[in-house]
Amino acid sequence: MTVTERAQDISAEFEFLDDWETRYAHIIDMGKANPPLDASERSEDTRVRGCASQVWMVIEPEDSDNLKIRAESDALIVSGLIAILIRLYSGAKATEIAAFDAMSFFDEIGVSEALSAQRSNGLASMLERIKSVAGTEAAAG
Image (tube, rainbow, N blue to C red; front, top):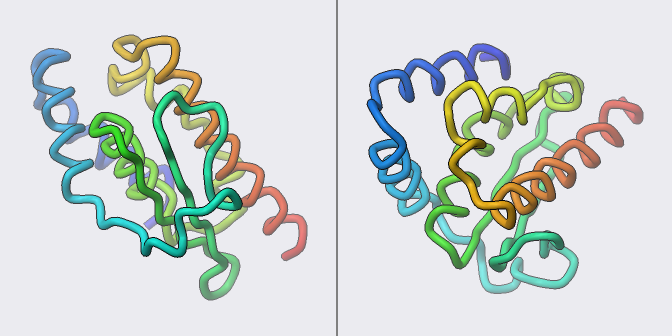
């Protein structure tokens, strides 16, 4: 499944959620289901800077130019944002990840407008990390 197809699935899911409170609760539920990283993976090397809460992200090459993304946060809403990013990107080709406009996608599903400035900055930092690794992998491939 392409990143665009994944985005369409997530967008369709969010269309059924009437208001921001329902979306917020759904995002938190998604975050609760996000598996934690191993303690050894929560390090300075994996920490995402620019987030108000603690975020650790592990991005690894998978088979044939695909990237596997795993991440964890100590904040429930951020864990939910991570879960969305993982659904969008984990297992996708680095070139697709690098080309996809995730900020527009978060605007489209009505998430960006409801985030505080700090959470928006944190989301941008997580996306920057993912895009940076994807860009490096795409250039190498």
